[in-house]
Image (cartoon, rainbow, N blue to C red):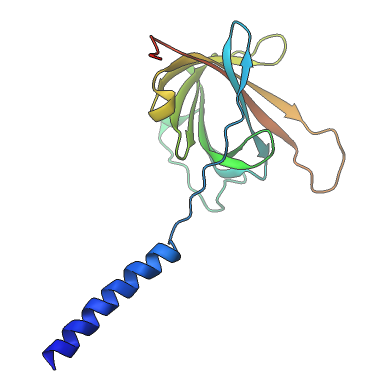
Length: 190
């Protein structure tokens, strides 16, 4: 009787492992990076978020329609002028490749725009932007820190708003576009 029970337990564990092997719980596929080499700049990548479809969270003081609905922003005066967003980020083909958070502060104490871009299986990049846009409508920033693939890199990132002028029904209002120009900082062994 004990042997039958023990054999059943061993076969059950084996069947469980076989099930996990053939039907994985998570099938996280890495999307191929779309990297272009730009002369005298390094490698460039382009990301975008369609607005409002790719917004996951939007929070700010006094916001009429927070996302998700019912989000209550703290009434702390130190958070006056702070706006935070969590967005799905897409590559040039429109495939969601990761998430990004954007924090904008515009009050009497400071003006700051910060991005944190996270791409699964590649790492995260922390970017700070100049809050004042250029004459062309771009905001320019720098990669401050990174993990995994972004760790040995340095470079600049531009942000701009591109309004949708297609007039199509269901089209986004526009998109936030990020263009990153990264180069390896330090010596790379061959």
